[in-house]
Length: 284
Image (cartoon, rainbow, N blue to C red; front, side, top):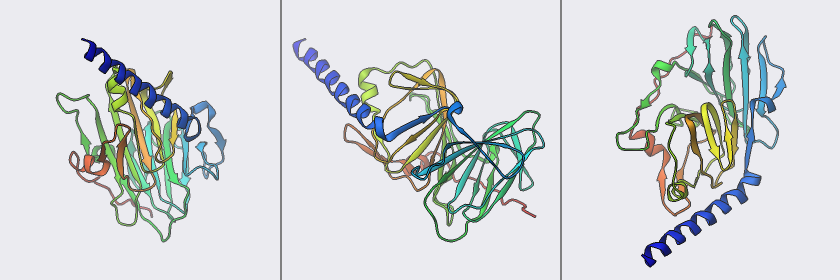
């Protein structure tokens, strides 16, 4: 009994220490922006555009386009590859309809026109790295039905997801995946401590549904979280579950956990899903 009590106290102390480390780095390496905090920007076309992150010091830029039916916007040529994701509604692009959950890769130096095509306004997220890349990329479309997906595995935490960009398309290293977490799961201190981890690349997480618990804060749909490379953090799904999109401008390396373990992120996905089945758009 005494040994068990000491073990529990030791684990709680380890958890508190790890969480203190997370809070310390989060003050400077994690930025959270809600939709209300996104700044209005001009765009090519009639659509509204708001920027979550678009400053010279932001390693990843994120913009949200709102297109009423028939309204259009153009993703202009950039110096780096862009990943677009249809959060809500539907758009047409390159002769293809992209409904909710679809995506597109707009390679550096190329452009793509999006036109609202549903009965309601479409919301489209556009992620891009701020670093200049050489050469000219290509445009690829990924309708929702073409996204390789993984179902929740029996006996696990119930996480499912889909892979939109795997950093392996020739000439493009962008990464984009979605995850879905069930609600109603309370983590023990030990489980929360095991989940503290970091990634080797800058990333942006965008919450598309449900809520993400970050410490004492509950972040809902429309919230973007920019996390610097090698920053330790953890999160939990809210009561109604959690869905998000995760973008990196470069190929992911290993996920490193605070307790010392690591795992290959690309390897994790390749074991569970196939390659994205892109379409070549008609741009004439």
